[in-house]
Image (cartoon, rainbow over the protein chains, first blue to last red):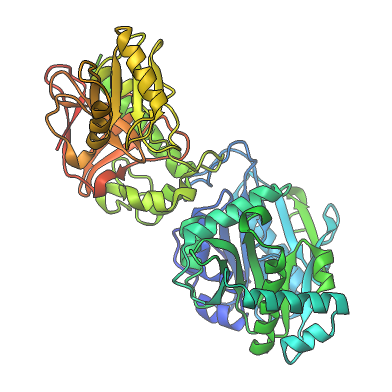
Length: 346
Length: 256
């Protein structure tokens, strides 16, 4: 097994990346060009580590190189080393509920723990003496078992909400919900459809949506709810979102008033197995002038998309879990694991 | 006071502004990382178009990306720098009143010299209270400086009796610089960038504003504005020109 590290900001994509992307059925956020764009605008830019077995890419990891937050700055430019200590996070920002490590489907489960130890040794050599340790975020139970060991820490993290697709249509899903919730969703759906002051549009590759407007909404929304502790992500910029929502595998749902003012937005990552609801942002209730029906409506539309797409499940990410459970989503356990430097590779 | 040392300090402040913008402001990070810039180059091998300068309209469209990671105001300040450029244009003294003609949401200038009062008035014709105050100041023998577009200044002078004389300080944008005799270089987004000096040349507000010629036109940088951050932006759609030292004062002037 051989590991390669690529800085998506300046390095070309690893050989065979396109084939691996297809074979491992990755979400659009793993697109190498997109990773590069995201890394340039990140406080803690990610690198892509690929594991090769006989020349074939068999696994990939998104590794965030994180520095203590002394001043809000983007990460150092490639080639410039910081003398400050840092840690690495195996994590994919903005793909809530999924780990930062992916394998080809036929990679043996029994070999994964060994691959992980080998990765840690390679990472230690690659990043040098400043590396304090590795943190694995949003990993599932099986992967948490691979990361466990002497001197390592594994803790449960906030679970992610997933709706298994057992439905032929959106109506099938509605029938499984408690009657109060069901009638509430139907009433909201009807009101939104009849509201002349609301323009709802959704679809892939939206070139009629202004990335700057979406970014302003996303930023204001996140600021309103406060920063998460130990959040190493960077809020996406207008330039990034402008390109992102134009991708054919990114569906953007917008709620606007007749004058074109954006009231709420939701992005959904298309995937044959598990489409993923990603960013949700809305104006405060007093500014948008209507109730909270838009948030629920975005779920109705996402479930409709899932049933029409024939996907296995719909992922709604982390947070607001009680509300998501009322909509039929089930929590899926996630863990975080930390491996300090002395035990890396052991 | 302008000498070689001041020129070096001015240039160093600009380089600092560029490096800081690249390290903390999303708009410049993305633009200069992907396309590049020059003078100074921030990513080796990437020199960009127009030396990395961006049209002001494009920057304003992505205003949310002009706020640095540390946070800050997302609104430009069109009154920024008025107090400083007035010293070059008309030199208000203690007791003077500066009437700024602009929309209702304009904030009154906050950097006027000590003893000089300022107010904002409707550009279509000042209200009765403003006229009353203006007349009272003139009666006391103090000066009144009226700053705004030509049309708005005419509306004020027309509303006053003939014996009352106000001093006009008309706005001029980069693409409409004339020979004065009075005027301030203004941009609705960047604020006040300079003024027509007594030498008949358009002087930059050089400790606070940097300008440099690029292929796309004169690019301006606000050296001391934290947010929104404007670095190497091309106002008025890009106007060709150069920055040269004034033969009389030695400080940088704009030649278009």
